[in-house]
Length: 112
Length: 113
Image 1: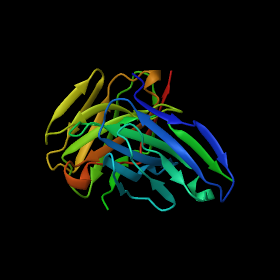
Image 2: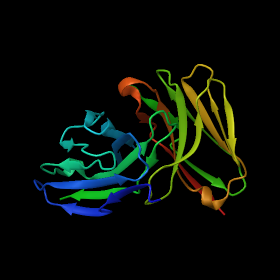
Image 3: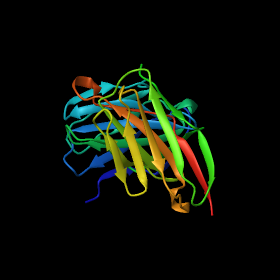
Image 4: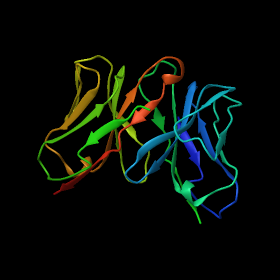
């Protein structure tokens, strides 16, 4: 049982490049979310999904796109990377009605 | 939007000491959660509280859900070196689009052997 798997673990991008951060869970969880973690800021919600085909914006959605075509996968896309998007990104999932999220181990992204 | 104020920001303690940290909010939550994050890893759930006034223990950890539903605290007794990490409180309201976690900014715990 892998839980929540994020790839890659590390990535360096040049300003203006695009990329997709992958997230997959094998627990059949309905809810999935993307958070970014910056020093002294805690974790802030970027986008979330309550089920396949349904997504919505969180606290800091600008510069990011998501889609949810399957229950298992919830990729996060950066269309044109900016230095302000340098951060550690966490994907998380939970079952509907569950008490807490299960987090992946994170993707450390640096935009130069 | 909703915000959580977590304190202290950091703590440096001696092994064997007790630790206390707390979290307050300007709005109420249905559920309070406490997570721990080890370096290079994602947060891991320690304790979940879903009833105002509830006091719950998990080994050396004890957490309480405040009566007003706007605060929570976490105590760690007899700290050990592996308690090192960042501890986050999080509030959660179920229903509609509110089934998302709001995190505090974390308490960084350092333990001297």
